[in-house]
Length: 283
Image (tube, rainbow, N blue to C red):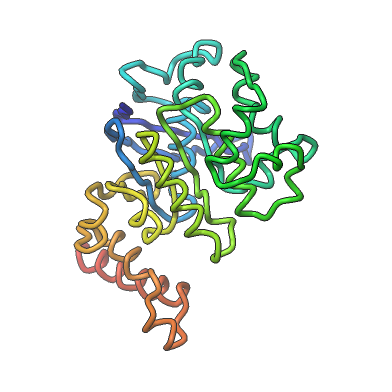
């Protein structure tokens, strides 16, 4: 369904001198991935590793500097925006912060109907009510505004909006990282239930390997713009092959660590020291 071949993305920083060329940031360094139809695929890595840049390219919101991106056998990386209508039908996004992705001046019914309006499709009240109920909200939520809901409820509204045009692919960019811990599991389980019920392909981006393990069947681990490991999620979690993946797994807090007062930051720092030591030993 989704194929990426040697995808690279470079950005130029502002020039700091008239005598020197503008420095180049290599955000993506030759990404090659295959995501099958109906698969729940995770992309995991620390902040700044290129996850969101890769997601934007998959969604047709940005173009790679080089390489190819195909969705359903169609090359999208060189298409103009006016020719990406088929992609907007098939693929929808759920973003990290529901408050910033929902227009505070719009009622929920208009927010959920946005993709349908953009595509010139009918959006009767019955359809809006059906979408809201499918994500666990009552139909009377349609007349309210985003600020009248909790963070978890706002993310449910975002999911309802994403489902409005009946997409085949759902792309979720850190969909629970901005939510309270108490509601994260509820939203994750909702996403899983919807993906399975509608037989969707899911691309799930997160910095948290434990969240990806709960949601995804297969995962790609990114570091500094590169994919360092790809495999079945349980295998990557239990038997990581790359030193960086091992550091991510080691940084996941466990009950014993919590009782001992060790935080995720402490664990990550220790894991980084181990990874750095291993890399020095290889040199």
